[in-house]
Amino acid sequence: MIFYHTFEVRWSDLDANKHLANSSYVQYCAQARMAFMTKEKMGVTQLSRWGIGPVILHERYSFFKEIYADQTVIVSVEIDGCSEDSSIYRFLHKFYTPDGVHCATSEATGVWIDTMLRKMTTPPDDVVEAMNKYKTADTEVLTREDFKKFPFHPQNVDPEEFK
Image 1 (cartoon, rainbow, N blue to C red):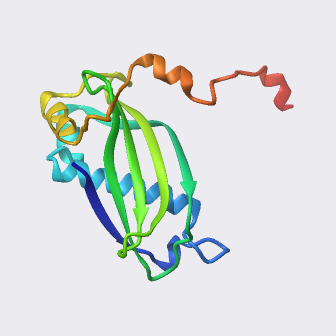
Image 2: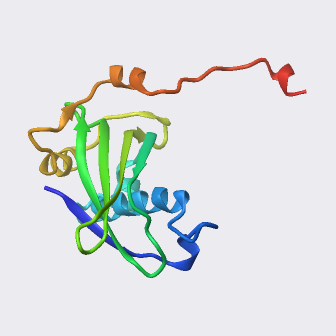
């Protein structure tokens, strides 16, 4: 299954080049995910009751066609990858115009965290069931090992370098 969320591009969503700003793509993906979660009865209120929250660890984009002010854009939410217990997930988002033109794609990998302990956690069965409804035969099984595939890793520096 694929979930779709529709946006009307506002003037405030544009950048200096008068097309959809990079930051707006991030916001549209986040809002599409929240609309998906609300539809599946795991919105902000329910997440708060469960004491969990979704956290994006890595996000990347490819852009194919510009999106302008006053256009309608439709953003998909697909489960592209998920761990066996759904604690790790990867959403795939595709941006379309109403006539089906594919304008951009985003991939967002994240985990569920316990909002009190601030640690990765396994979500409740309700979340696992909702995620499972959107998996396909092509949904990749993810593990913590997949975090090593991210292109960037922490590299601390001596704070003296800041002086």
